[in-house]
Amino acid sequence: MITILNSELNDDVIKSINELLDKDISPKIAFDLLRITSTLQQIVEDKNNIYNRILKKHATADPENPGSFRVKEELVSVFQKDLHDLDNIKHEFDLDKIKSEELKLEDKIKVKDLYNLKFIFDFELPKVTTTGGENFEENYSISDVVSTEPSEELPTEEK
Image 1: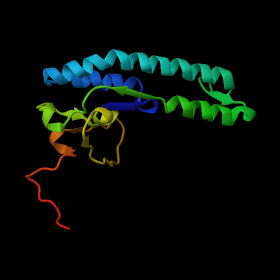
Image 2 (image 1 turned 135 degrees about the vertical axis):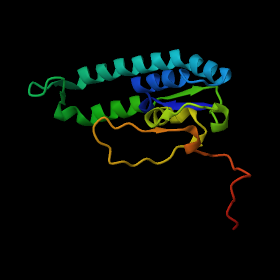
Image 3 (image 1 turned 60 degrees about the vertical axis):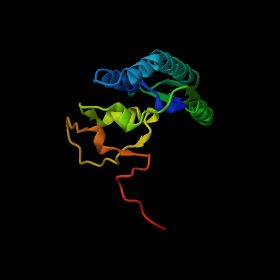
Image 4 (image 1 turned 45 degrees about the vertical axis):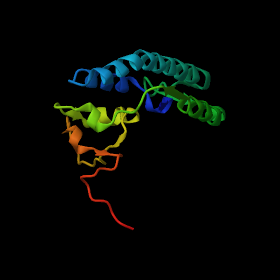
């Protein structure tokens, strides 16, 4: 079972799914991803529409910053509650999380795609720290992530 919060969903998630689908992945994983993609696209669209309705209800355009909004002072707490409620809506999909060994990728996956899709993977992603920089992009292969399944190959600590 995969559970996703609205706060985890945006247009980048859809792009990351499409990036993964462009890789040479197993037919079962490709089918599962395609099956949820249209639903996720609709959820992202609905979430964005509700967000815009919340903005129109509680905010006005900021004349000093085009494209920005100002929330009316007396409505800040209601605005925050509405956004919190929207972000915490859960969506459940009857799919198993993907294990690293199931992916069997020869290609590399961009770190941002792994993080955008962390809700579908059953392994821990590496913590990434970087000094970044303009146009910085880094790739990690799937072997750079740690499975949550115990491995016979790795020694375990004895207590």
